[in-house]
Amino acid sequence: MKVICAGLSKTGTKSMQAALKELGYNVYDTMDNYEHFRDDWIKILTKGGNSEDFRRMYQDIDAVADVPASAFWDEIHKAFPDSKIILTTRDEDDWIESWTNQMVKSAHPLIMLGIYLSPTLVKLRWFWKQTVLAIFGGQNYVKGHKAGTNQLLYRMKYRRHNAHALQNAPKDKLLVFNIKDGWGPLCQFLGLQVPSKPFPRKNVRGKIIEELMASQPTFVRVQREVKVSLALLLGFLGFGIFKICNSAPSTWFNAIYGYILSLKTKQH
Image (cartoon, rainbow, N blue to C red):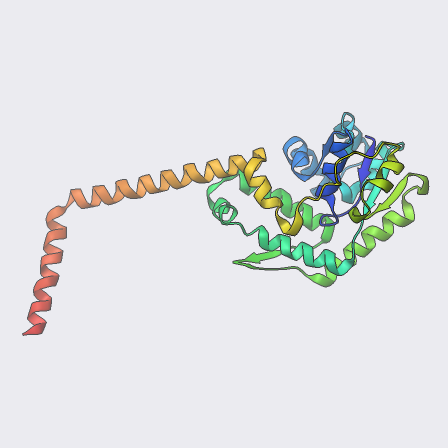
């Protein structure tokens, strides 16, 4: 482990992940942690863990970014004391607005269907729920296109998280970074040359959901499960209607004929 990104979600974590990958680092973010260390993280989030868990998990990984790892930066640093720490930050009002907007974007139609039709999404949502509860102590709510959080709670957690990092991270290993600062401060901190490419900007206005749907393996699997489940449901429904209509045609005919006669009787 060479770099621990300690910034919470919506502080430019996806841009930071892309930047570190451009610089040659192998980076694990939220979905990588879910896919490779789901059971380990469930244990840590619900029962507890220690630096030995992180040493075993991340011994072959260069960097971690985003939750849940960013919320446990101090324990990860105990496991890898030579690693550098990057605390991504942004204006608090912008952060809470961005977080709420992400919740709205998460109410994607396929995700809403997947809640009922995809076993993979059920597991992923439970993992995310445990993550949010452990880090923020409260849940988001999403209904239709309305989303919200307990903003007071989230703001307090955001302040305390940043204050803890600023106070306790070794000063010679800490970079407080805003992605608007670009390559310069980051590359100087890491001792690397500045790339010729512009600094990446990812998940602008919550577009990460669309990107995940397009290529991320777990979300591709969710979409496949939703399509298969819908096809099976429609098939069973069609077969059921066919059997009903063909098992008692005279009953259906008599019912319709009787209804027509009743209408004529009322007219007279």
